[in-house]
Length: 117
Image (cartoon, rainbow, N blue to C red):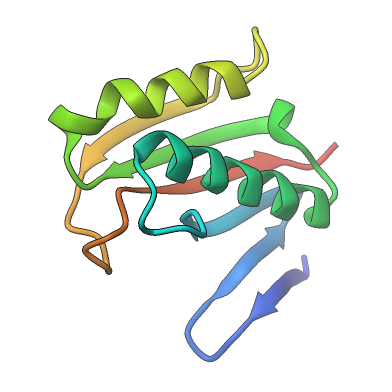
């Protein structure tokens, strides 16, 4: 089976498709000065754009790993945005962990696996 890579640079691909499965690189928001809710909204918007590019959408999410800079401070705010974004009945397998992220301004990063239709 072929492996398709999109938005690739020397270090990573933003989208990898193999055997009917879409893998997204860790996604973050655009405005690193924003709070957790805005960073989460922007991150989810970026995820939707990449899923669309790959030929799928958020209703086909299989697994999501959420990395938070400060789980105590940001878990509730991130979940408030997540809960509004995700349609009922399509919740993926999910893990949320606290992590030291690559830039100190990043509050949330998501890694996503989804199925193609």
